[in-house]
Length: 312
Ligand code: FAQ
Image (cartoon, rainbow, N blue to C red; front, side):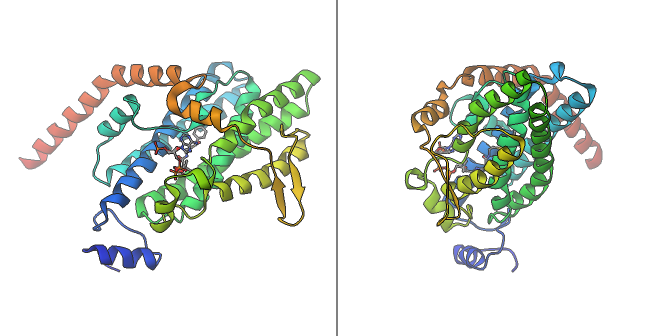
């Protein structure tokens, strides 16, 4: 179908499972919904560089350092794709970053926890990237073209991230008693916050209704969380890690795991700015954003000069 000129063309495209593209006419509600979700996704990728960045200088080998550097760089790249995709909806990156700095835009709960040991780097790759992939594979079928296409590229890299995290955990579980203890401790601290990444239960998720109507979301928060649990429990078993949930039990009828209740008070507190590292994460972002102002000025000045030269 060609460009969309009316709202009824838009609905026709949605109903036909066709992607909406930047120049298509779209309802304001669709645009606003996407700007909120995509910008929060972009902020998460960039803020998510901080907990792992903390370990670059302390990686236990040159190989581990190279892998970690490449992974963190990938996350920065994901943020850039997503900011660019969000800009196609008619908002600038400066405005998006201002919303983040003013606390008007959120980023994922998970990045407000500290990375205390090397095993945390394993847990982040395995669990956090693992959860991100489950969510993002489903978003490959989201209705907005630039977002869906960004998800294809991002998922390829996330799957490498997930495997390198699992490799760190598997190696630690083959190591000394102290290393095994460190891996289990990381598992204990990252498991529940990773489950929270999928957002509140469907019954408490205010945006899910519109997200389904517009085919922005293809699977609900609870469906994706369950998918993540089912695949991750088996991976933990293979390397000898225990999931820190005494209520976790295979449910023959459902063919999936029943699990314990998530601490939603903790989730709400973390996403409203009161997690262990919220202040540190934002202070760091604001400081380096301000220190990088000269780079943005130089890039703009160069772009203007090039434009003038081309016009002459
Ligand atoms: N954290 O009505 P819903 C990564 C907020 S990327 C913070 O269910 P929705 C890669 C939500 O925004 C990780 N806030 O919302 C990496 C809303 O508040 P608002 C990021 C959360 O949008 C790995 C309110 O609660 N991935 O990890 C969270 O329908 C390693 C009500 O919630 C994405 O962003 C949360 N976890 O569903 C990088 C994926 N959950 O906006 C570095 C794209 C909910 O009204 C290292 N996003 N809230 O103020 C999505 O799929 C959706 O936005 C959900 C939430 C599923 C996150």
